Amino acid sequence: LKGDVEFIMYYIGVDMGGTKIAVGIVNEKGDIISKDSIPTYRERGYEEVVKDMGLLILRLIKAQKLFVSDFEYIGIGLPGSINKKDGILIYANNFGYHNAPIADELRKYIDLPVFLENDANCAALAENVAGAAIGTQNSITITLGTGVGGGIVVGGKVYSGFNDAAGEIGHTVILSDGKECTCGRKGCWEVYASATGLIAQTKRAAFKNPESLINTLVKGNLDNIDAKTAFDAEREGDKTGSQVVEQYIKYIAEGIIDLINIFTPEVLVVGGGVSKEGENLLGRLKKIVYDNIYFKGEPKTKILEAKMGNDAGIIGAAMIGREG
Ligand SMILES: [Zn+2]
Image (cartoon, rainbow, N blue to C red; front, side, top):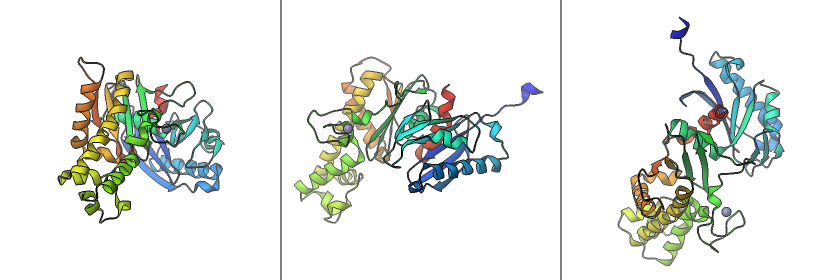
């Protein structure tokens, strides 16, 4: 009979953000079985925050009629620099913590190994295990948001470098002596290809071209411009809107071409709010990328829209310990 019983593995993933902590129990396919979240209240300090996290995890396990011993580890994704070996959050803007021993702190409440991972890497792993890059060994996920986040998966594992700091693809320069970046360099990809960059480009274009429909769409107030405005203006036939979008897509392509030339992943996943433009963005992006990548043969890297949505952080975190 034993051979007929399917043994199901469950995993715990935590998406630890500056405002919210989300915990989920995930099966091996990357489906969330149950989840819950609590406010972070980070100003209390990490000890209190991690205690609440631990209690929430225990509550979820109990509600599923499972036991701590049913799990092999807890995975936590968080925004910032980490030391994976020691389970330490070295620094994170969103929390203001320095060298917080998150793993040791959580183990005071739950006797399981605790693994930390950068949240962008978690999102990339989630896309690889259960999302747009499912079934592939090598994929890269980029997220066009406030900045340009990214994660590189090689052989089914997150590639994080010898000091856990790799994958900062937003801070590669596409324009020498370009605009200043928050990292201190000039001309970083994320300055141009992020949603923040697109909004700045749209504002400048609207200001220079008072006749543009962009100004009408935002009722004359440039502060109302968001990452959709230029795309909306273009759809209405606006020339300025179209120029902004064309240039923005070229900026995204520059970085993607570099990534493909270096890594040739099987799939390159594009996520973030801007990716919701779908084929309108991806179709044009692919044309530029495929016309300019070094490799002229087949098969080529597929460029696909991200699939995972808001739960990517939980799912990716739940999978990090499976890397071995
Ligand atoms: Zn930078």
